[in-house]
Image 1 (cartoon, rainbow, N blue to C red):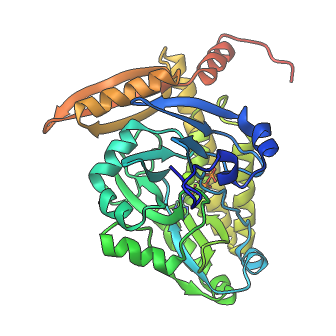
Image 2 (cartoon, rainbow, N blue to C red):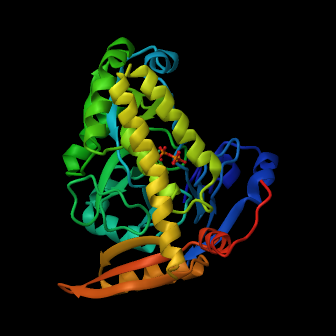
Length: 378
Ligand code: ATP
Ligand code: MG
């Protein structure tokens, strides 16, 4: 419940800072969902005025995580975005989770505002959630779930065996207002909540000088990039490594007919600007070109060959959890209309270790059709 101070429950539109009419205009874009008897609504796409992933549940709001703007060049982008000191933290490649406590119950919400049973279970197990919400009753804990065993992403560059959480924000649950960076880092440290690495606090000028080296080092380890923000946490900027750009391209070209062309185009362009800003030598530029070409061609060729040999390809993930949690995840995917095939199903120390594939439709169909000789007018 979210009371307005005189004991009555505030309407959703008030909590969202919208007029009744403005709320009615976007109300139809909220999707109904439920989780273990809890009914909620979530906004899965971008709407002006309300963040994607915003959730309405039990008369309260769980504000969506804001979109972080990006710059294609550090040198001009940083002073453009900031005129005060900024904290630079690692941008981790996993999936976004907001953890909130609603009427005594802790939930893990994915980026689009869905309560994920697997994530909810993991955050309760991995983190001192009750102590966190006792200290911060009106806040939510935002972070990235990383590691190889999760149902959504596949990055393997972290020293994590199965799955782990890294905090990067503590925000007011309803308004989404962030806690200042230093306060947030202290709050997490006190509770032993693991956090995204802090590289330091810099003036914009110092950041322009230091970020290329930070990015190069992250790149060498196959890591994703950096998030810069004012110390109040209210203004942010992100920038990614070549490894992340090419990794995303390799993923997109594993399923070339399912990933939007914008997705790939944007990542190609980032590589061009980075190559120029980093003043690469001819040899370095050729190496980048080589890497870029391989990230497009090799996964695509592998997919075509697998489909040619009669396989159906899809996105493969592995999860490890108590059997009932894995069951709940599979049921959750079924409810969402995803088609899942089980690849390996085993037990390790009382936990179920499951490898499954999310069916991808268009790439299979189109590739098969082209292999069968479909003629295209292009
Ligand atoms: P969206 O902004 O909708 O999540 P996107 O896929 O374009 O879409 P990314 O480019 O991955 O987003 O960058 C934003 C995401 O980066 C955040 O949503 C968050 O999950 C993740 N992230 C990882 N590390 C950090 C960090 N240290 N600070 C903030 N965000 C981080
Ligand atoms: Mg991401």
